[in-house]
Image 1 (cartoon, rainbow, N blue to C red):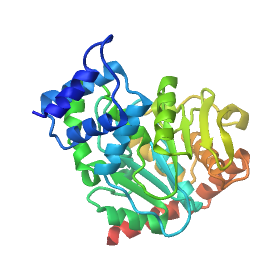
Image 2 (spheres, rainbow, N blue to C red; image 1 turned 30 degrees about the vertical axis):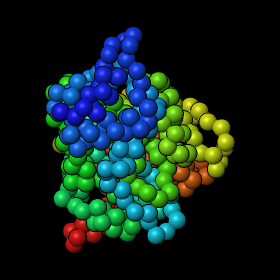
Image 3 (spheres, rainbow, N blue to C red; image 1 turned 30 degrees about the horizontal axis):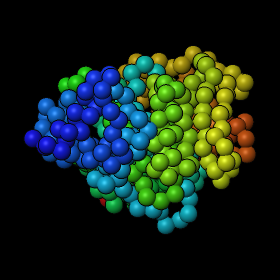
Image 4 (tube, one colour; image 1 turned 45 degrees about the horizontal axis):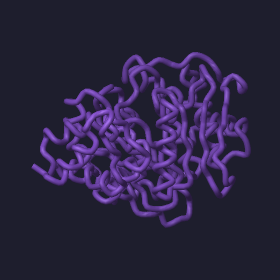
Length: 350
């Protein structure tokens, strides 16, 4: 048993009136002891559920991210000066609405904007469809790759994926505990802020509840991460909704020194409507392939809305309307699909 961890557990697990927040260094120590499993299973489970009940602070999340940076993988900077867009989405996947992020990532990469994703397999508590399964269905297997191989693909094609079981087995080791406690632990929020890349990057994180966004902003400020975007997306993802207004937060001191709030409606661009439901991975992959082939699909408006927004947001397109038109062009001409084929080809020889 870790006596050090026992003392940290006592701080967060003493109940509503007597529990105390951890300092940044204490939070880092606690997560490192859990990742290395120097804490016992009983201690780890107790901490995860106690900390969920207490609720994390921005300072604690900053400490958790310090632990991820210290013990986890980090891709080296690309040789060119492009800022890498890092999409951080919930690891337990989507179960109600159809995700379109793989197509968005391909369109950005095809436009010269490098994109890095990260995630694992089906994860508690939702066990929704993970991104890695969708990539496999598109002919791209990110598993069993070394970090250097992922870096090569990111450098050559502008697309990369850090797969948790291979690149961060210490974090993968806590998945069983997450299953057993039956609730999302604060680690789930940490993953929304993680960027396993050491160079210039633009972090894009999804969230559901406004208090989570506030914690995220505090944690990122403490960590010195200044270029980031928050999206009140579908099921906490970075996918913008079409059936309601999209709520987006922008922190980019190079463009504006103040925090910006952006409210957008897909209906203003004739792309509004009901969200496409997620029925099964098989059905979703058929929809994604149809979009990549430039064919009519009920998923196409969601793809154009998301890809068009991000093309504009990262500065490739002059405005949102032009971004939507550019996304449609890249799909119709097959350029986005060519990027997918390039990724497949490079991975096949690595």
